[in-house]
Length: 304
Length: 304
Image (cartoon, rainbow over all chains, first blue to last red; front, side, top):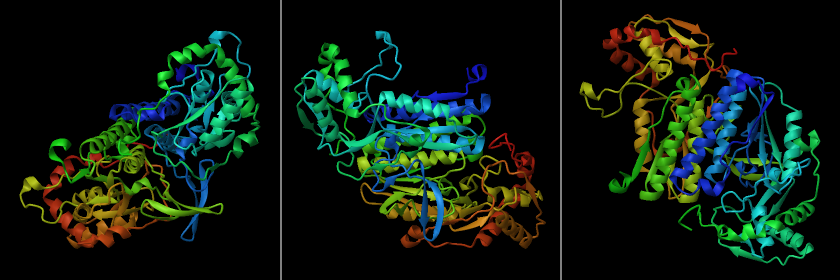
């Protein structure tokens, strides 16, 4: 396909996207890393062989960095150590075998750029939420997919579905975990900017792609407030955190590069949450039928 | 097997070990990472499930670090960045898809230690050479295997085989690449020390395992000198470097931890080279029959 089509760019979104799914058992861990890592390696070889000038846009995740007690730069940082200086890749400390599969991808892509002259943008994206992108066609069949289960439903999507049917928002643990988030419409805006501004041949660049960082508890409060503004009675509850992660920590990733390319938030989080709740309202019955998927039973470890 | 045997330790050497082999084509790259990464993941799940207290001793490579312009610590270092401090994994910059497979393993093992309480020693080993270990049985059937081809024959083994049959030592490029090396007998000494001194439960520790670092040119000179001392006429030649690597660079990995556990070189490099050449002499005809494997034809890139 690449040989015949000769693309200017390839946007690679074809990965298994769930942290919880990758932690189920040995087979799910192996599938996750096999699918993501080997799939990306095959794509890298195909690019090298058939369209070496194409721009590879790869979706990584802000979760590759974990939550170090330092500011998080975009991919690289200058380090001074025992009197010498160098610019090094920023160390990754991912929190699931899925997130590690993205780190392995990032490392393989960085290497392919170095030895083969592939050009690539590796996107460390925050948690995406929402149902719409700008200029989305109006027909129902062009609606986005929306998951709200423990594996594929990210936290804000789950909270909004819970708010719609009067189910308490299920906060994992105390909810102090901080993460970067981004509305779907601005994820698409950033992708378009990246495609319009490709890197140099052989360049491997890393963009942190998110709007702002919030704690899970703050996100629940924002969904509650958006729900109240359209007449929903939204309660919150805490459930045992099935994940092993810091629940109260420093978090300060930078996102300068996309802003320099022209990224500008097209909406506030609060407004987007209200629009999303309005749009989900007609589907309340579908959500209620599946509400058994709200509670997480995939544990990161059986020892806690 | 693990459930029935209940081992105190598992020494994991079951990986595809060649940088050049991993660079042949897409299928060889995929096989390398599939075999090494998924094999290690399966072992991690088996340890967690059947013998969670066993000590995993994993063979990584000093090549995981690449050649940064800084001292190389053992796995972790303290960093100050924008006014804050943290202890972080030392960033890896491997030089082949094989070396990257070892980085991916290291990352997966570090994570398993953190979430499941696995205990592991991850060995960043230098280039091993030699034919003997201490207390090796005398029978011929207990001899070690020795490869000297471009894929599985490491640099000193190749130089020694070339010296034996009067073939010039094939130095890749100028030979300024510096690497840590270790005689086989001391690789075994270190493994024994590691097994006798296991880490705490949940501890992930990284040991840099090598004797000293030399440039490829220095190694060739040492083999030449060892050869001359037993009457061999040893010439050197430079061949085009098929690899993409720095050929003149800073290199200073630390190896304090094994020394603290009691590691002490049991021989000098020079003496070991002489012993090795003496031992290879009777096999000169076998080496001559296969001398077509000396010249490297696997290129890291077709663009240089």
